[in-house]
Image (cartoon, rainbow, N blue to C red):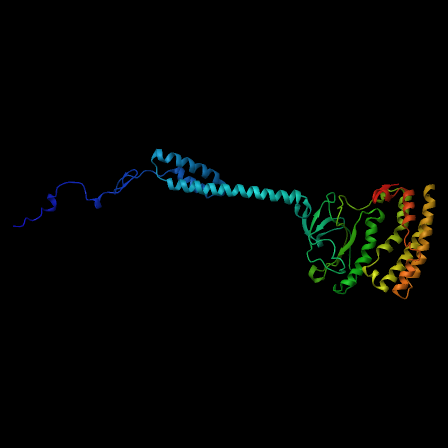
Length: 384
């Protein structure tokens, strides 16, 4: 006879089956309705603050504190504390790296590199922002490549700097192009630029002999429509090496009466010299036109030199000798201006192998106390 199993209510008490055992956590049974340990506020704050870059260091510190305290106070949030510590550490490390690298690059830019010039006083601009007297550095270089006559500047960006800092260039004058024609012929505009810039140079630095080793250039707008109607030519002096650390503008008030009269008398000859175009070496018409200007300028300077009164006795002889030399050169230049061929021009221009008055001018300047090149000191200058 089979015995039926006992009813469920009569089952003997005992431990539950293995598959029915209650889950147990690190803080005791996790049965339904059981109390949970509180969440660590430090752990939560650590993660939140670590995500805020400016407060990441505080989040890192709070995360470390939370990890130390949680095992002892039985609170939850160890994972949050670990995450806050890790995130805070990464953010702090990256911020420190960026500060080091960024600071080094800033120092190189402002003190050693300084953009183009290494000065914190530079101001970014373009060529059309330049005014007479401004010292600057063009981003694309000062002059066109060797042998290229009308190469335009494609990058008009410049840094405008104080003239008492090393600078490659300085604007010495500005003028507006004449005529109503469109600005489209570089050669025609270059001729206008040369004609307009030469007098401005002598207004800015009347004693061109005393200028350092510089070259002359200009910038003009490529089209009126592209510049809002601007037709301004900007003329500048530029140096590729031995950058000036002061303005090249000269003050005639610093000279005595004899020196001022001498510099004024030499201006026609100097202006004629600087009016030479790049075509003088290759084009007969350009060469003969320049020779005619040299003849007229030399004759005018000779006349003005002879008219100077009140020169010191030591200067009269040298100044008279210079006037005589300029008259002789004027005759040579006038003859060259009428040459029918290039070969004949070269022959007439260099009759005696001595086509300038530098020797007489050196003596005259020395007698007047104007600066001259010291041939015994490798081209340095001395004051007479």
